[in-house]
Image (cartoon, rainbow, N blue to C red; front, side, top):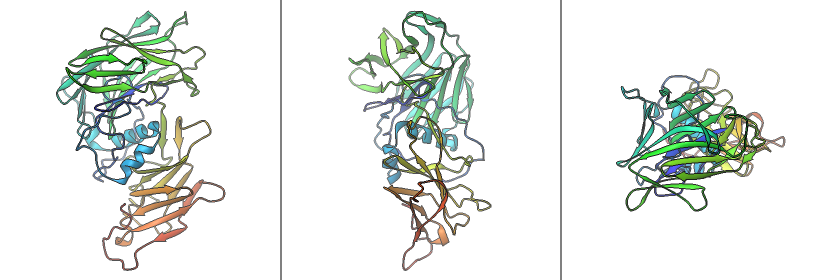
Length: 407
């Protein structure tokens, strides 16, 4: 789930509880400075849920923090789980989102969203514009029969912070769209004796929580206005089956209720953690997968302009994803990979992408030191395998460093 400022918040789902924090619109560009920071495989733990406090899907709106580019609006049109995945992958690949170790515990700083999160055995504290709210997972179980969870020291790696508690794992990760959190429930708390699966979180800090009338959202207020929102609650089991879920508030304790009858564990609570993991099957860290995104109908195309093609460093590639019959949930890899037939090192193919119906255009601003746009038409057999362009577009009077295809 995401917390949002000055706007509604949304949640995604995954077989874990997920909440997130965000202060910019969900259409923020997933851009970077283009530098590589050391090859490594992304550590896939999405932390959008655990604390339903600072980033519900809507994203916190923060004027001046929204980058301007066509990729912003394209990203905003993606299903929320895919937005979250791209944010995590880019965050794991970009130094500015890395967790910082301090004597008091790890810290995640998100300048793009105006957020700072501190982690200790006392919970996760999220700060925004002088206000701070702390969420601490205290217990879980069924109905009012709850098992207290012990305090535990947080661990951090790359852009993620994790609270390991045996069958319940609380995770956070940092990326362009905000700080995400999720709860992973590996198995039921005990034999079901009636009532609903319940997670109890203590809410403290300078903001006052207020539950919506439909029990689907939580507003965090200062004296005269809403600072953050929490909403979009969603839950699914391991098969992707939706589970009925809602919120309750007892004083300063937030209760997340889920009807898990007949559910297969692990389960995910929260839509922002519907957990569609969109990755390149041959991807490496620092490929900048997700630098550009476009979607049309059930097809998404994602650029990876620093992808190495064979021995050609930073030639770049683009990946096509087609929505499965069961939906965007689960771990997804591309159905097709797009490359340029005349690709060369440092072309940056995939820096920009667009799609309309059965046609995809991919920009390579450094191709031949001038730039080019490559056009791909969907084959009769569909988007599958490794494909090369059906047309290459250039200017009639090319000049050096025109960077055609940059947008």
